[in-house]
Amino acid sequence: NAGVTQTPKFRVLKTGQSMTLLCAQDMNHEYMYWYRQDPGMGLRLIHYSVGEGTTAKGEVPDGYNVSRLKKQNFLLGLESAAPSQTSVYFCASSYGGLLAGSETQYFGPGTRLLVL
Amino acid sequence: AQSVTQLGSHVSVSEGALVLLRCNYSSSVPPYLFWYVQYPNQGLQLLLKYTTGATLVKGINGFEAEFKKSETSFHLTKPSAHMSDAAEYFCAVFPSNAGNMLTFGGGTRLMVKP
Image (tube, rainbow over all chains, first blue to last red; front, side, top):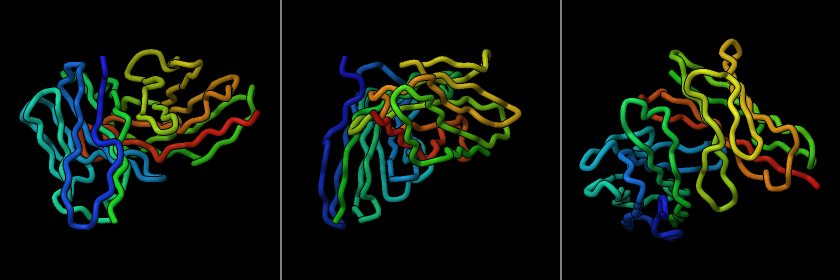
């Protein structure tokens, strides 16, 4: 049982380049999330998904897109990277349902992204 | 509307001393409250959570937190710090300002001195 995995672990981009971060979970969770972590700001939600084929905007969605074509995978895309997107990105997943807000989120190990 | 404030971005204690990490929230609805811990170069993992019922919540590794509605607080404590407790701790509240999602505090880095 791998839990939540993220690829790649580290990436350096030049301004304007694009890339996709992959998140995979093997816990059959309905909900998946992408966060960014910046010093002193905690984690901020970028986008999330409440099921296969559905996505929604979080707190800081600008400059990012997501897709959830398969239940176990949640992809985060940067179409044109900017230095302000330098951050550590975390994926998480949780059970869904009526009590989704009280459910534990399970986090991946993170992806460090540096945009030059 | 929800927000989370963690007082003290860095807290240093001696091994064996009491650990107290503070979390205050603002809430217009009854909240769910969480503490997550992040060890170096790892993702977050749940320490404990309050949803309903008993206001004193016990978590893993000897940590506990008490939901005090009158003080809008959810402080995290441990009677005796261990070197392995050195990590960053995040308080979170549901729902957030933006809707049905978590809002995290800025985090508190706990350092444990031998």
